[in-house]
Amino acid sequence: MTPRWPERLWLVRHGQSAGNVARDAAHEAGQGRIDLSARDVDIPLSDLGRAQSQALGRWFAQGEEGARPNVLLCSPYLRARQTAELFRDAGGCRSTLPLRLDERLREKEFGILDGLTTLGVRTEEPQQAELRRILGKFYHRPPGGESWCDVIFRLRSLLDTVGLHHGGCRVMIVAHQVVVLCLRYIIEGLTEEEILAIDARQDVANCSITEYGFVKTDEGDGEMHLVRYNVTAPMDVDETPVTSNPDAIAGSRG
Image (cartoon, rainbow, N blue to C red; front, side, top):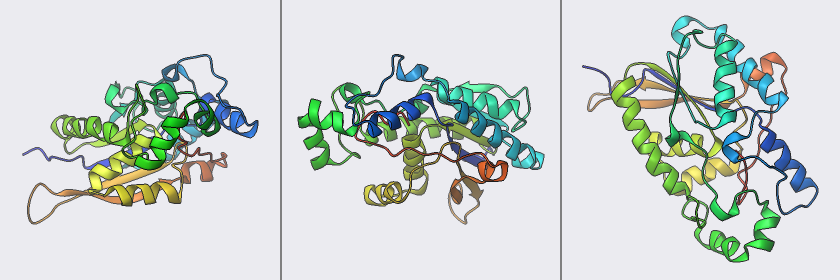
């Protein structure tokens, strides 16, 4: 019988992107909008983000074959695809492993708030800023965008697909900050309060590793146990700078 869960599951946030850099610059300059001309889906990695992705690949390359992924799932956003490709090229998995894109792993959509800094939301969309304050980011859905709940809905479907097609495999998912957090929420059966507390304690670092291992249980199909969260060892070992960006009200480009 094929297991319902992967043998091993790694969740990886993409490397630092040009959007992350532009967002930081906009906040430091007190600007309301992030200076980007491309679609969010087309934002590439920064030079540092490329180095982080390669460090991640080299770190996995040093492990045994059984400690490397044999399934590579990825958000279709350019920064995530580049992270996965650079990881593979650096030896993180076999060079012929196909990169499987899944639109359900895409970044949280911000709708009319996309591209705005926290200041920009307060000045240009004060009604949405107040709604978010009242509802919280778990439930607030900006016009044309998504709440965390909406992201969770599509990720539940994604995990069903992983279980159906990749049960018993070693799966790596390369995606975005909110996706990593929402997958934790689903896999561990957390509450809104618990996942928001995790989010408040620390940001998900670029190219950090969150790892789960499958554990058999006396009843049911077994379950996934958290092995480590938000680990930056690949960059630490490689002496590559670690970066992270908080999930702002909008336009976090995470």
